[in-house]
Length: 402
Image (tube, rainbow, N blue to C red; front, side, top):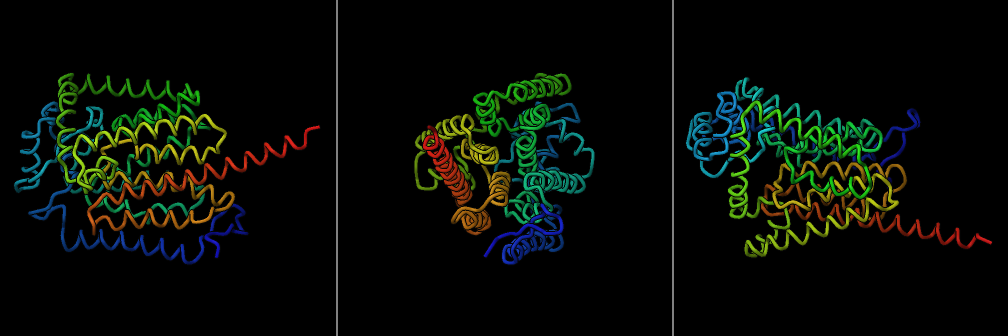
């Protein structure tokens, strides 16, 4: 059974096989039903006991609007603002870990009502994410595949920024070869989550893409300078001082929520020191693999898929909503399969990764990290297959020489 076929009327269109199409449609309906039920029955944005991560974004924006941007990094102060928005006491930690550049996003949102800002935020980032995945796959079927990806739901429910991260990373990889300046601008914007962007620097350095690096550096410096001038140097000082506190909170967080090597180590009872050591080893291995791959003659789609996946493996701070980024390497792998052929078990591996993300709500364990490892294994398998083909061509050329 084939998974797709080329449309004879369009020539380049992709038509999914019926079982795959039905599966995607079922996942899409599941997402929609869950969101509708949450809105109608639970009213999770306005219920007395409701808490969404978006309250942190809106509260930080309100504080910056009132010329108290630096105070957003003080947890007790921010908590009081969040509780005034929610109308009830807040348990746990919902701090503001982002650099002051992100105030340029949340301040305009805070001018709207809380509910309207939430809706605008999730729909806006979702549309950008849809556009990125569709552009990678190169066909309208990308909309269905993107919307049915299980990690989308987490961003809709809590109002997090995983879809924004996915759209920026997807955009960088889309434009990297054809429009390096545009790719650099998007990479500069990704500086709002520097732990996701540092691996791109490695790939760009080893592949000599200096225009991308230069434009990214200029954009990052400009928005940092603008935030300094707009929200004050105190906000940057407070941000830098808060990094250590954020790392301490991460070290004591529920391990089931951290979808990283760090979280997995803690899940098996490892100490915090051991978890950090494991994470460092994984990160160094990923850096080395990306450096080798991006200097090789591998296809660009494979390099892009590896970079998107590596960005997830190389960070300790990875939550369920961040797994929306995994749709980017999956889309590049799907494009490779459509342009040539899918390797054995490749589609099954993609399905397994989606299933692991889907069941997170029922197991609350680092199954998302396992999903990332599954995609990484698919990429390694692809790389080895390309290497075998390359070596066969080289052997044939040597045999044909006089």
